[in-house]
Length: 273
Image (cartoon, rainbow, N blue to C red; front, side, top):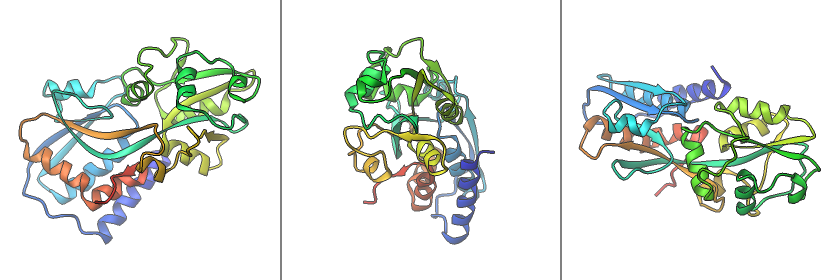
């Protein structure tokens, strides 16, 4: 179990003790949720809390970085897909935000980057950190698995879909991404994109990494929530358009105060209306 997962589970347990869960209709049955990105710990915490509030409901989680969650919903193998982009054939419900942090080694003294520079770096147009005011080292690109929703959203935001060079190092798990950035030594200096919670956690724990400001905006929870930090993706639950009481009740729970408290442990909760 990772440290993030343990912290999330402890916080969920504490919230269940001190905060009453919202009353919901009597729902029963099995709900299958599919995903392939970094949201697994949050979805598992939501599922366990939902089951506690709805004893006749059961949630199975299908999590595989090589899977296509949207396709699983479309074919009926799952009822909810966790992703960062909408699909015209499905209904999308947003439960939070995720900032996309640009992670580099702590010794990389590049002061900041613009959105366009991030796009140029990951499209392979900028190959030396010195071109961005940084050290005289070559850029080692770290990409994510092709099917992962974090990559799909990142490419779409920057307008570089299909343009990340095939020579980039492809890594799935966030912890491996961080370790690779730390372990990359001159004449190379690595750069990766990670969920904001992953980057902030690594920095706060003293790992030798830093997050680059983008367009002079620091990657932080408040700047992601209000949109000042532009590299952000929505946390979406996609489901079929047909009515499904179990799906609707789970989404309502995810948007309730206890559900949003769980989301906010690792991601940016939705603004309070």
